[in-house]
Amino acid sequence: MDFAFIITIFLIGFVGSYVSGMLGIGGSIIKYPMLLYIPPLFGVTALTAHEVSGISAVQVLFATIGGVWAYRKGGYLNKKLIAYMGISILIGSFIGAYGSSLLSEGGINLTYGILALIAAIMMFVPKKGIDDIPLDQVEFNKWLAASLALIVGIGAGIVGAAGAFLLVPIMLVVLNVPTRMTIASSLAITFISSIGATVGKITTGQVDYFPAAIMIIASLIASPLGANTGKKVNTKVLQVILSLLIAGTAIKIWMDII
Image 1 (cartoon, rainbow, N blue to C red):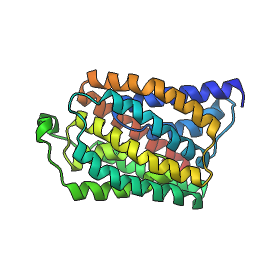
Image 2 (cartoon, helix red, strand yellow):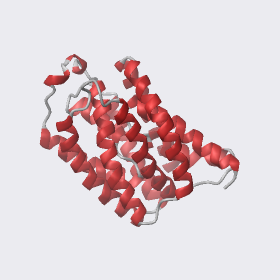
Image 3 (cartoon, rainbow, N blue to C red):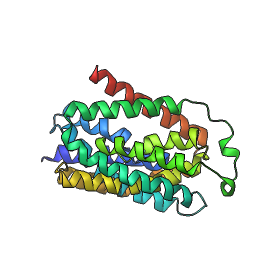
């Protein structure tokens, strides 16, 4: 591994984790295509889809810790929502990550493309009045939340994500959870999900530990910085940024698949 490779992976981890902390996502929606496409552009070692998904799974585990810590105060973490969706997504992500070893490179990329497309469509659905709901009066359908989290976990586990890029639009559009509570709670749920994805990837030998370690270091530095920025930025701006990021990555993946 040369110096250029180390710097490239660190910068991908830093940028991706800063954005993930700010928007309440684990960052795989951004870092999966970055890890897949950016290293070859700079003439450094290219990573396979299996390696990228394994690195992403481990990195998200650490990226979300910093984000949750930054949001621990202020009443943004909905413990009931975290419990129902967290348990379900943990089970789903382990199943998806463990089963991903049976898929081809194209199969993993196709799964990512489908998830990103669904997330992109959902993010552009109008969300009216959700930020007018007081945080202590937020209600949601518990079993619908748990069922959707299980499905998201299976798909996200396959690509080494923790599913926050789908959890966020689901919580905003389907469950009607306010934006800042969605961002904070999704980070906590994503952390739980990433445990299952990481265990599944490690037990099936899909993790390249050296680049994963570089990504972890970058994540621990950048994620809390992004979370602090997210607290200060207008919620509408956060939604637009996330929508554009998800749409852009979905378009890129589908262009390659087609």
